[in-house]
Length: 270
Image (cartoon, rainbow, N blue to C red; front, side):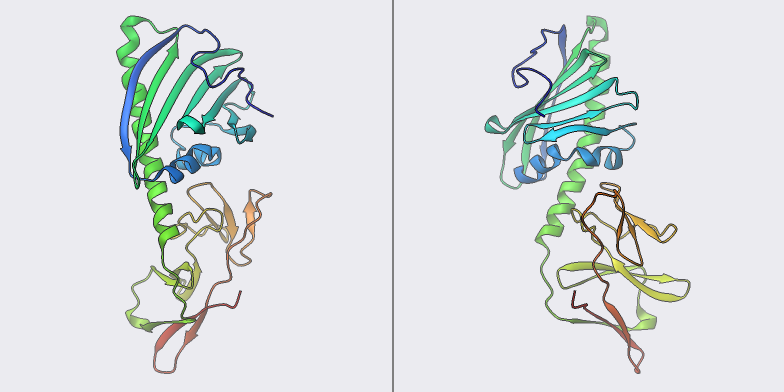
């Protein structure tokens, strides 16, 4: 299903009483591919931006963009429509059938960075409240882009990491290990932990989009990715939530204890 908004890529298609309350400009330290990837990724909103979004439920998504419900009653929606040809997209917010906001974001490719310009158009704003509302929007978007930028930069780092082809990683004397620690073996990162006096190794990359699992806490035998909330059973590697996910944690390397007191990781064949 396409966007519900007719003529979504023109300015103010509903002829609403819109006022531009602020303009936000920023250089994002991520390339244009990462930014578009982030824009189309509605699923990270309730996890990475949990302080900004109380409720997010997908209604429809496609090449045109996405639309989500913003409350359990399905009376509010957010619809994002992309204009890839012109490197821009628009987000409209609705309460019941009324449009309350229209936010245009323009993207400018700067190689390893992306310039953004965001125009905030809100409905039924009085002149005396414009500056106050504008500051609220600027503060909110500063936080959102801070969080998005950090995720995009970390994802790029993980995509660029080298492959360590050696099948064995020697860690040295076990008493010298500074746990917890993250090491790289093969094309994956691994987290070494001390769990109740035993050395334990787990995947440090989420198999969904390589989100960081280094600091994911074990709770009832599960770990959760902070980017999209994917939960995995540590023992089986199976994805517990969302149930429709088609990914699982990779088989962890074998811990090899040597007679000389050193310890190594041996890469799994799978």
